[in-house]
Picture 1 (cartoon, one colour):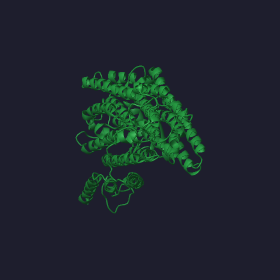
Picture 2 (cartoon, rainbow over the protein chains, first blue to last red):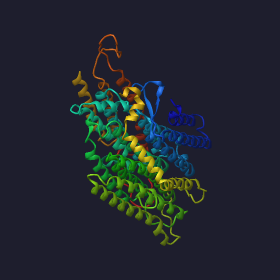
Picture 3 (cartoon, each protein chain N blue to C red):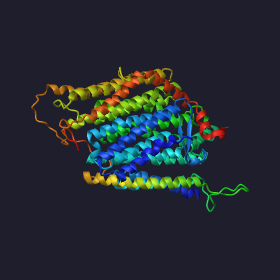
Picture 4 (tube, rainbow over the protein chains, first blue to last red):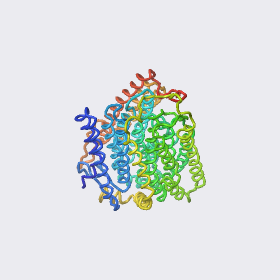
Amino acid sequence: MNHLLIAPVLLPAIVAPFIIMVVRHHMDLTRIFSVASTVLLAAVTLALWAMAADGTVHVYELGDWPAPFGIVLVLDRLSAMMIVLTSILALPILLYAIGSGWDERGANFHALFQFQLMGIMGAFLTGDAFNLFVFFEVLLIASYGLMIHSGGGRRFQAGVQYVVYNLLGSTLFLFALGTLYSVTGTLNMADLAVKAAEMPADDTALLRVGAVMLLLVFAIKAALLPLHFWLPSAYANAPAPVAALFAIMTKVGAYAILRMFTLVFGPDVAATTGLSEAWLLPAALLTLIAGAIGVLGSKKIGRVAAFGAIASMGTLLIAISLFTETAAAAALYYLVHSTLAAALLFLVADLVVERQGPWIFVNKPMAQTGLISALFFAAAIALTGMPPLSGFLGKLLVLDATRGADLAAWIWGVILVGSLITIIGMARAGSILFWKGHGLPQDEEEPDETDGTETGAKPAHLPFVACFALLGGLVALTVFAGPATNYAEQTAAQLYAPADYIQAVLGKEAQ
Amino acid sequence: MELLVASAVGILTAAGIYLILRRRSFPVILGLSLLTYAVNVFLFATGRLVSGAPPILNKYEEVVYTDPLPQALVLTAIVISFGMTAVVVMVALGAYLSSQNDRTNMPAEPEGAGDDE
């Protein structure tokens, strides 16, 4: 048993209380510990990634209790990829938060940030359904704190909605887990998979109910269309670095769908076939359309980014909802891309908000307008899926993978039209913000100085470093698209061969 | 007993959902609490309803026992829902104090540039 496996959960769990209790009053020390912890976390996750890359499934039994009785952490290619993505994403976001001074505008930003990382890491690593719920709660309770960081009326109101919506989701999660437990007598995912596969096909009403409720919960997290209402105002009103970190939170939902509905309720489990296929795909298509229209119709730059995130979730869920191996591979590549792209767009949006407020309107050029408009251009290209960045490749992979599907015409049509609408929306926002302002007379009275932060005055290099780091990640994902898609294909292959996973977790008992 | 527990879960859930739909923070918080009670009772029932039996298996004879795992799950769920209720109370209080309004739906956005709050 390799103890490194639990390090991604333990490290933030130790650093966060340390930050609260010991170095709370020293902003510099807090920042140092927070960044050092995140760097260390990145190193640990990369080491775990290297461990999992050969395709073995590593299992960590907490307290050395054997699998169906104790809680296990499981590291396979998918979890390894997700934790690496999280830690790689967290580092630029943290730098941005420090550089832009967001972390000073309220209490305990860094501690909450570490707790949030702990929850996300745990959710990706755990092999137990109830433990997944617990880690969901850990990441959510940290996100509630982060969401209302630095306060303000609208942010609090958006926070109330966000908290209430997610508490409802958590309650539904518990109902789903209770139902599954009452049918199968276990909550270990591998054991669930064994029990679900053994179920006689005509006696599975409760199991199907539980599976659908679970899917609904994950759809809430993933902002699938009828359940996406919490996202736009929450993301648009959250502090920008927090919104950027939330880009990975919707992916937690997508990950959970991918995990549970390949491992436990996989395509060849008789008990639950045909449960999700009928409506997950149409809902994903509608999500993409709603996101695209939202991008086009937003009056605030933050909402543009939020709806952009919804649109990218739509594309991702389209690929996931087919539940085939090639589509899963495309989904995984697109997942990494869309996380980085959405985070980048949130950060760039904040650069604009810091300079001229949240509204999209024609204003005289802001400070560093050239750099910011270039970054916005790059982020928009990435998120809409235009060449040359990885979004194009991701969408191409998704389109290619859906070619043989029943609804292929619909999928292609929606993805292409949705992308077009998103492009128009981004172009509209970008041209109003950055382009039209050049025609204005320069001495016009500034209508807004909302928060009084004149960023032109202070040397704020770190936010740009953070943005360019995320952009660099996107470029790397494009340049190394070959190895990345290889890895995604191997991951998808592992996902659709759950016998290894079950064997690794349950040992000999799988037979 | 089944009827009693089942109707308790049902009534609590229905009342909770009704209160959440009231869209003011105090009823919403009460509704969330009722929902968490409902789910706690529900989780208890998932181990099958047995009364007066120990949570111990006996390998020498067939005995009636109560499943201890749902009780552990309920304990976890109670702790989490307690913490969550505290958080939602604080967030709702913050929202009320900063906007003098306890509605949980967002007011329409003020039109025009430069209106941040």
